Image (cartoon, one colour):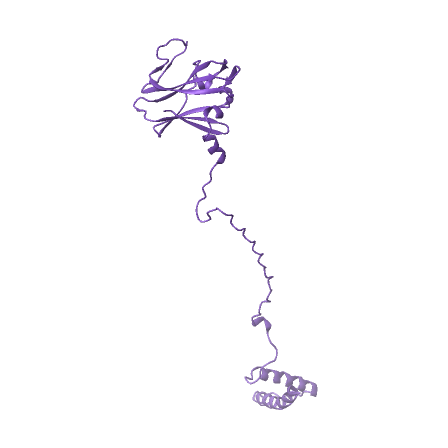
Length: 248
């Protein structure tokens, strides 16, 4: 409605301006019918509205207006329920280290050598002392095989008697039972028994001890010649632990 009224007002003015501009050129104003006048007037009105600062179009160019990105609601992750911590058991120090005692090892340490070596009842292992020399046996008799210490070393020989007080002969196989023999000297030197071909080597002994008799056995260790032995202990190790025998 407003647009049509405005165009009707503008058409006469536009035609007047057009007639003045054409009259200066000396040309006659062409005659226009009503339809042509209407179209020319509408065009002129639209041109004037385009440059009218007080006129604003209702049309909006959406390409020039920033669009708000659609908000996608992310699923809220629910925290899993915290598992209840088990209450600490009694006699456990949570803040510090827990000292664990191997009951089996403690029991084995308190066993006698006879019990640890699974000797039959009536069998006794009697400690006879130790000796130090450059070779064994020292006299070179009784055995066809002798053992000499390495250069700068000496032999530390521990002597035993395996006595059979049982009612029958006993078969002994220390080699097959897999025992290992170590000696700790002065609390700072530990040596493993030498494996030899001596007939009385306890670490490789395999034989029969007659009832009422005993076998003389030895364990031989090689230590530095400068070592002065003040204390010593024998450590017997097996598949289930170990046993310690002070050598006093």
